[in-house]
Length: 166
Image 1 (cartoon, rainbow, N blue to C red):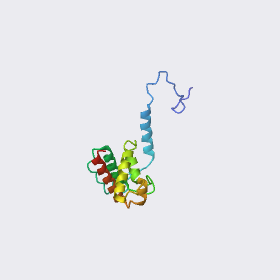
Image 2: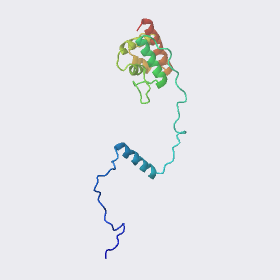
Image 3: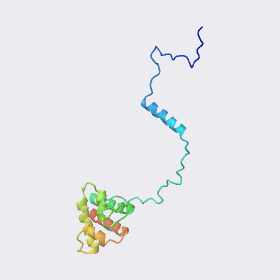
Image 4: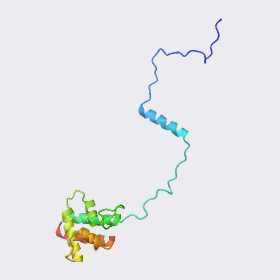
């Protein structure tokens, strides 16, 4: 007499017809994996209110731009010094502050108007400190007192370039 078979002792049946279940595509597998990970890891929402803060004081927007390219470049360099800071003995320091030359170079990366801007800036420096000024970096490192002074020199040079149509 045959013994009754249970589900545990019953041999597995192999399907004779092709399976109608389609495999998951890549996006579906990623979504499923994400759900599995989320279900296994207990997490609490992160409160960023005390961590992420906006700027306290936004810099003032620059005034109206000069219509001439060299004057506009000098004006942008002055604004860069106002927002990013001014430094000595380096073109751009580790904090991002620029010297007079570094501000011009950063605002004119293609060097389209850099030479003309440096000539006008050197003339503005000579008007303030005398004809003995030989280079912009030397004046920046030895004669400019602070960021406000550097910005004023750049603004004076921008006005001079605009009067000349540069």
